[in-house]
Each structure stands twice: as C-alpha cells, then as structure tokens.
Image (cartoon, rainbow, N blue to C red; front, side, top):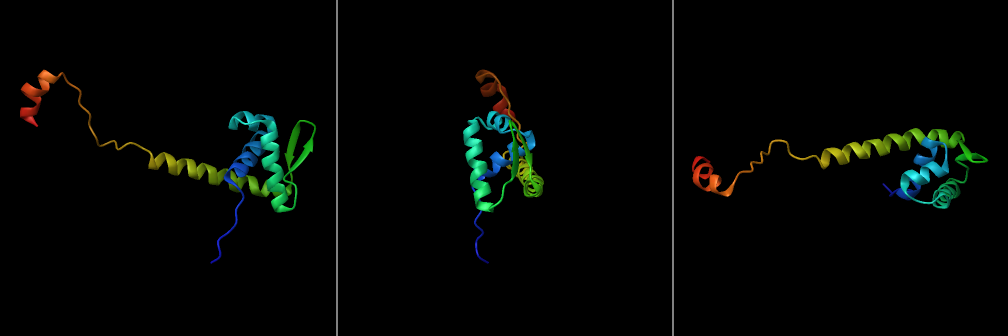
Length: 113
C-alpha cells in the first residue's frame, strides 16, 4: 500500500481550532500564534484540497460543505490522540511512596521491609 501524503499537523490543528471557534483570531489565541499564521495554514490546506474550507464574511468565518465534512473527523481524531496520550502518560497507581525521617528509616522501617 502506498503511503498517504497528509497535510501538516500544524495546519490541521489550525483548521480544527478555527472551525470550532468560528474565528481565526480565537483559534490564534488558543494556539498561541498570530491571526496571519492561522490564515496561512488554512490557505495551505485549501490549496492542497483545491477548494475553500471557509466562507469568509468580515471577521466571521463559516465552514463550507467540505469544511463541514472535515471538521468532525479531525475533531474526533484530535480527541482520540489526546486520550491516547493521557493513557500513555498516566502514572502507575500501584506504586507507593513513603517519606520518613532518615533515623526512623534506619532504626525501624528497614528492619521491617
């Protein structure tokens, strides 16, 4: 099977945030980038698709039909990645950490372990 060529993760995150907020400015704030950076990433996605993802009306943006198809899929994918990361980075809850004074550890605790 031939490898699929996907757009950058940065561009996909920019699209997902802009679609969720309905605003490039709010997406920029969430991702700690500029409005222009979001606009550039969206434009790159639109060029790769050969079709617009948003209808731009002043400061507001609305998803086109293609954008409406792409948004729920990407949103679910990012949620699934976040859940996977949380599970992988979870601490082992079976470990027990005990903190005691060194003298207590040497004279009593070590003898009973």
